[in-house]
Every structure is written in structure tokens, then in C-alpha cells.
Picture 1 (cartoon, rainbow, N blue to C red):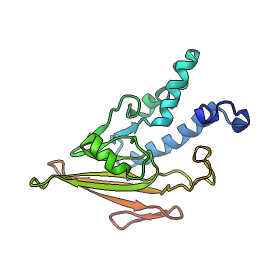
Picture 2 (picture 1 turned 90 degrees about the vertical axis):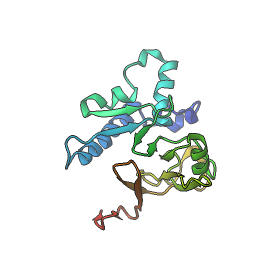
Picture 3 (picture 1 turned 180 degrees about the vertical axis):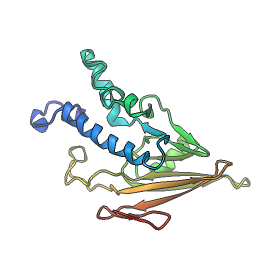
Length: 208
């Protein structure tokens, strides 16, 4: 937030906010996620897909090169120490495949962004970026092959106000996705919506 272009020329919007405080909070949350992911399986891979907010750090360093090596996410959030794999999904359009599912940060924010993602990537594509739940399916005639695109919601708090939306309603939805893969790469996935910090998993377990 403190290096967002939306705040340029508005020093009042940054009162009490610092890059260090944001990075400290990011490290705290990331550490908790890594611990949860590896609770049952210490060898579990943790993949971090770069988004537009992470990319701000590199843009900022290009403007102020004396900060190079300090505020970039992989350095500031200690990815090497945590054993987190960083994929430049936003700045270099890299993604991550598991079977026939492709994961990326996301690109578009229009009403039908899931459709746009399927048409652009031509993959079974799953992403965040928009903080909402939106899906689209495309089946090729005569082949039975289906491509699906789905935004997977968010885990962030619902803010009362976000500066860049200029007071417009937000379609943010808290959710978590669970995927199950077959040996041939085909998969099923389940979206669990989160209400009041609680959700029921595909196996029927209540988490809160």
C-alpha cells in the first residue's frame, strides 16, 4: 500500500504506514501459511505466485535502485529460509501446472474475467487477482474436451473502503479451493465459501 501509485501525491493517505510494517505483516502471515501447509507433510511444496502487488516492489526499485535487494518479496519475506518457491506470474507471465490444471495470479477485472482467462491462456486456469468467485467453461465441439476457468476468491478481510474502488461496491468473496488429482492429470475441485471465519471442507470437516 505504501508504494502504490494510487497514493502518489497524497502523503496524508500514507500517515502511519511504512514498507517495513507491511513486510513484517506479510512475513507473519506467510509463516503461518507455511506452517499450516507442512503440519502433516514437512516435505509439502509451497508455491507463491507473484501478483500485481508484489510487482510494485520491482517497479519501485527501478525508480529507486538503492533499495535493490531489500524490498523485493523473495528477499524481504525470506523465501529461501522458508523453502517457498516464487513464480513470477505477473511480471513474466509464468504459471504453475499440476496435472491438467494451470495456476496463475490472474490478469483481468472485467465482468466476465473467467471467460477472458480461458480464451487467453487456453488452459484449465485457476487464479485470484479479482478476489471474487467467477467461472466459465468452454467445450470444443466433437471432442468432449472442456476448458474451465475459475477465480478462487480471497482470504483477506473485507475492507470497509478501498481507495482505488472510489466507493464502488466490491464483489470480494472469502473462499478456499481444494483440488483432487487423478494419475492421468484430470482433477476435481471444490470451492468452500467462508462465512464468519468458518467453512466445511469437501470431506465434511468444519474448520473455524
